[in-house]
Length: 401
Ligand SMILES: *Cc1c(COP(=O)(O)O)cnc(C)c1O
Image (cartoon, rainbow, N blue to C red; front, top):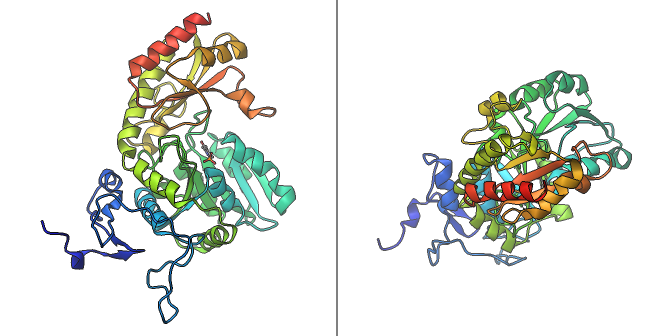
């Protein structure tokens, strides 16, 4: 074929021609082709990288490329953001310099007197950051039991509760929150609901379709998947007042992702579905093997039929139960630490959702006040052969027996 018929393309977005995938295509196709955007001059199959921090005006002073300055927008962000909005079923997305930058931006939209409800079990650094928020900002916070709807209901205060934060499956306890039910309760008092969906990814769960108003991800994890980018993202269901505040905050405070990281993230997301499927299948195998092993006194993975959130997870996760699982090691904290140190295929390192499997002895990382049991190991299952991972665990248990 002698080139693409540009007149038939949907339009030009920031110098890139949109797009060869459309509404009729499935998420896997959007991801594999990163929406199929390409630049109009050379028609490259892979998108270009736009490092420019600034964009030229036309003689009339306008910006013909639709971009002014990269603290506000950059064509390389546009493509990753458009793909993320598409995968989550939202109307817009914005990248941030980390998951923490994305999360804290949401809380910064609140005013003195506003009330927040957050879960007791949540990503520890967000929890620690939230603890200082009442004093800094004059907001109040209640913490709900992740799995108890009565507890969420009791925490909600009409009309002060403006923001409800949930995280499911939670990191590292793997508890499952009923997203639809919490959204109903929160919307009844007029609160906005935000889901930290890092562990689930849009390949398994789409929180906006379950009722949430915003989705947050640490894109450092499975969205990028290769442990070589630190990034965060927010996706919104509507271009409402909260979203306007999010846009203002990012443009003013500048917690943007560099173009190179945005480009790497887009490349990572092209294999998202393959990686998530492989990791889910591996995590299921590892969880089942651990469940049958006497050295694991408790295995926390929503894919196990005896997990208290298994039936609920099936209604809000489609295609698997995620790459993350935790176990409690027989023999206490010292043995847990020894097992983490004895593993060879699992790397003893923090983070999750990458192609390589990781183990972390979690309680010492969280420190005083943590709800994580001292003997808990968090495992992130990559895309290695599951038998190698299972044999690695069996060997480490034997060495530390
Ligand atoms: C890692 C993580 C974060 C924070 O993201 P960073 O990219 O490390 O800033 C937030 N929530 C969850 C569930 C995470 O796993």
